[in-house]
Length: 360
Image 1 (cartoon, rainbow, N blue to C red):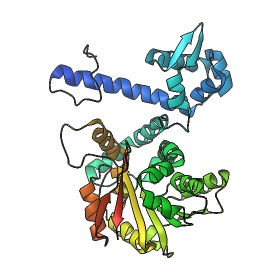
Image 2 (cartoon, rainbow, N blue to C red):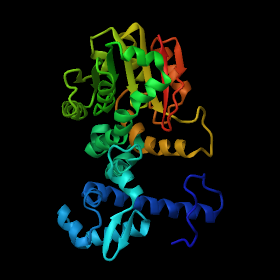
Image 3 (tube, rainbow, N blue to C red):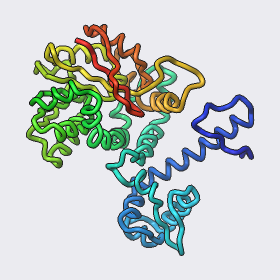
Image 4 (tube, one colour):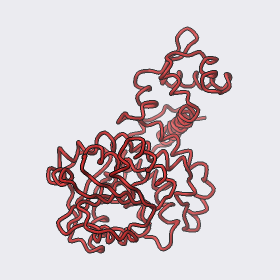
């Protein structure tokens, strides 16, 4: 193993042998930590520590139905990483780790990243075969871990931040949503955007649309649990097959870059919306142009593109193969091909998403 020290993963790697070796070592440490985060979330270890406070390995094993020897190794690993503190034979979550790794409502909740990476690694041979052939690996093939992780990562913002962001930055859209509007949420996934907006706007009626049947089933459960099933319905369908029209607002949150035929879907959005309505797209806040070396967000999104979004997009034929790194000019090209007059970047500040209005 290299004796070099890990470099800052948020900076582009340098060109020297020592710098590259240090980066690979740091990446290995990060991959190991993420695998342990996945185990802690999947097996309930973080939840139990958050609920019960400091636990010995035997106590945590007993509360989670797991084996004490593995629990001890995991706890010592977590302590070595700084996620938990060791005190008199017991281990407790640090305050920061409790929020990031066990609080599903926190804007900083990141534990599901372990599940997302595990989903890709589970099909790594299929991914490599696709890289050779030009084929793909579908969202369905990535399985429940990918679907549930994506939904869990977006849930805090969609439930607790999206409506406030709209109200603060987009008064015209906010007024429209408060006026008893009808909204079509294309690519809704497990429905948190649909549910979150319905909770914030008491007279809003929402139709969530997604091709993935398990996601739609989960969305219906979420709507029922949160008491908005009378105003939010979900359909497992291609947006182009939805015959309803005259929606005041049509949204597509973090999904256009995944679509094999985004022009057809955006054309469907145009047919669904009223002539004076809003079509709003939110997608990754990547740099406007390709640069290398790139900043951490573009690097992060390229990583997801290689392992999740591009393979899913290319699993359908024909496919434009957009990938996660969809720059504003690409969306503008798709929108114009779909019959819109252009795209307006909206004055919305968000770390991960850029918001657009497609101009009818």
